[in-house]
Amino acid sequence: MGIGACAPSITAMATDRDRRRHEDVGEGENGGDGAVHRFLREYREEFLRELGDWVRIASVSSVPEHGADLLRSANWLTGRLREIGFPSVELWQVDGGMPAVHAAWCEAPGAPTVLVYSHHDVRAVHAETWGESLPFEPQVRDGRIYGRGASDAKGQVLAHLWGLRAHLAATGRGAPPVNLKLLVEGEEEIGSPHLATLLKDHRDELAADLVVLSDTLLWSLEAPALCTGLRGMLSARLQVFGPYRDVHSGAVSGAAPNPCAELCKLVAQLYDGRGRVTLPGFYDRVVEPTAEEREQIGALPYSDADWLERTETRSVGGEDGYSVLERVWIRPAVEILSFIGGDPVGASRGAIPSVASVDMNLRLVPDQKVAEAAEQLKAWVAERIGDTVDYQLDVSLEAAQEPYRTPPGHPALAALGRAMERGFGVPVAGRMRNGGGGPADLLQSSLDAPVIFFGTGLPTDRWHDSDERAEIDALLKGAATLAFLWTELTGPAPA
Image (cartoon, rainbow, N blue to C red; front, side, top):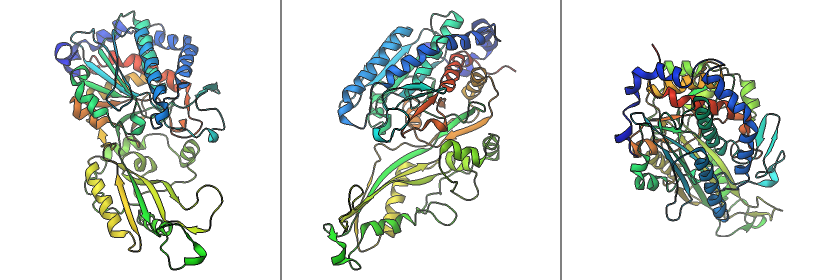
């Protein structure tokens, strides 16, 4: 169902908001809010059992051998959606792509249409580095559930499903108060290469007034913050070629070009003495944060000691003149993700390698553009690489993601803030962004709908690393937030 038949703008629902909130969900422990929280407490074990079942499916999108697991994962989700009551559930798949799940429940004439976006694929694992659990054998202990995808992002998707279950149980409704759609893709962890085609091919089925992207982090359970944007992402691989073959170092040492040494010299020039990226023109489009945004970020409870303990990053560095959270959320960066040359595994052969390579990641902020950053990187490498070696630079524009920020002051942000306060039981502590990327800009431009962000991940969840885990309280309070969000979206805040 498209938005034309069932949904005016979110702000058009202004007059009914307070009446609907009291009628549909009530107030206090004995009203709808308490009923939502009680439902989620009562069904906590069932929630965790379902998440464990889903985590056991090794839906790794970057490994071709797991193609069948991606299909099993998508089918698992379709079954849960049908059990909840979604009248329309489909598998979508572009030629050569992994399966995505689409569901729609549009039985609220005159209400807004909301599309939830997330993903069911997970990152590859190196099982030998998992010391606290096995990646696809979920464990529950000490208030956490362990396993690949427990937080990123199967846990976040399941929070939506159980939030809706709690909402329907607490209110006695037979359908959501908004027209609700879901798109859970299977390729996010490899850059969503077929998402643009999916959005184009299914534009009418996905039409919405608002997109909720659930693949993000919270600041903390005690001080939840409203996420208002994501950085963009551009990946590149640089290969540097020295000798035509690996050569015994004793025979040519001191005269032969060494690609590892050349790469070291080049990477050392990536940042200047103030911690700023040296790519030409890199900061030309970067918009300085407003005093209000810096104040909202500064309002979050932060200390270096707490940051280092939660992120396990050993020390603090970065660009002068900005706080740690500003560096991570609202300033651009370039990172080296891998450096390979010589004999990285096994005994050394004592040879100068013929090739060395780095994988790098550019994190961009509004109003930087992926295509411009790619050209800046190419110009920087061409200018600074040594003339004794050859090189090849491959930039992954197809998997790149533009940065995105929710329009400031959009009423959906206020609605989400109210839902979070009801879900977490504490005031929203401030505003944040996420340092990672996501297809928010693609969703907005394809569907002509603004994007807001709500996820249940935490900095301690070890995304993309060994022993990934999710805080059970974050999942349940996140589900409660989502149970309240649908009625909050039917109108603006009270006067």
